[in-house]
Image (cartoon, rainbow, N blue to C red; front, side, top):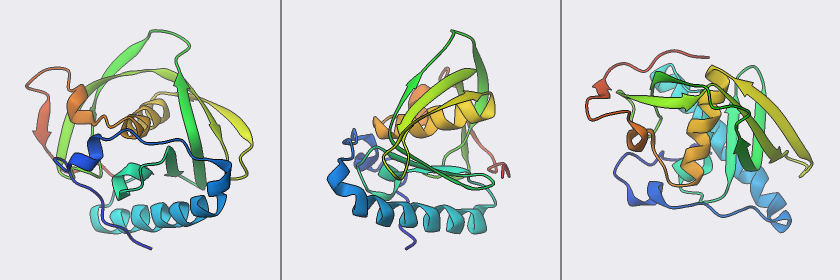
Length: 164
């Protein structure tokens, strides 16, 4: 079901999400369907969108959904960084369409997570994929890209980029 995406300024976006328990396995299926439908609807409307975090639709659980060429579900993810190399880029967000923010992100990351079967997994990320999952992971901790702006002149009203 398509859900409303919480927008910049909504206090619920700044809340830290809770871990998902194995007893919530059936709920995860519902949340993933809602995340998928919401992401696809956003793509249809804005022509952009690769991933969404559960808190963006009001579900304060540690759940990320990414759809590039196929769906990928991240339950209770954690990030580590193999080195200190970073880069600066313009970032956008489904919670503030039309606004882009210049942020600094790690060039490489490793995400540890449970898949939809609660099996432990790990994925090495680099470049755009590393940035994307750092962005989504921040949502789980109530952090928005606007809070990571590199300075007070790093906000711009621009069209979201097509990136899928």
